[in-house]
Amino acid sequence: MAQDAFEELVEDFEFLDEWEDRYRYVIEQGKAMRPLEDALKVPATKVTGCASQVWLHPVINDGRLHFDGESDAMIVNGLIAVLRRLYNGLALAEVLEVDARAEMGRLGLNDHLSAQRSNGLKSMIARIREVAAAELA
Image (cartoon, rainbow, N blue to C red; front, side, top):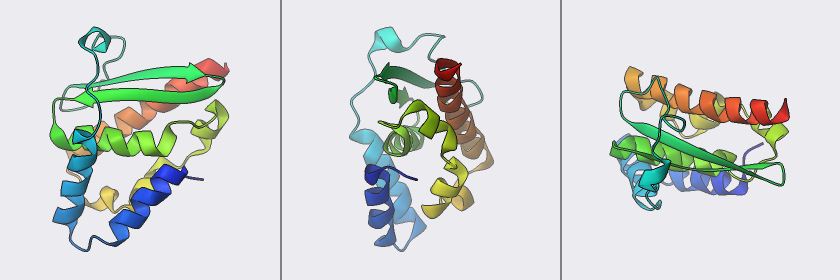
């Protein structure tokens, strides 16, 4: 149940045979994002459980989730960009239905991230799910 933007990313990854190429592509996705405004880098938007500094700023419009984010680590910025492709624009109930681990597995990310990065990714996904669940409650 992935977004069209995420499906495009999956297709792009199919053309990249080497993990290093995929890693660089994820980093490029992060570099293409607009930086998060400094005013939004506050304790309320900071994601705990990440080895690097990570902020996610969610906005709910018409019952749909949109978020921006930033990290001080290039690969984590790329992971934020990937998560944006997976979740942005979904209805709140749909956010909770996404099997993010399976979707990330389609990109091969589950097998190639360090334990710290994997934990950080889980923390970001948990925060996204928490926001959706809180809005639905």
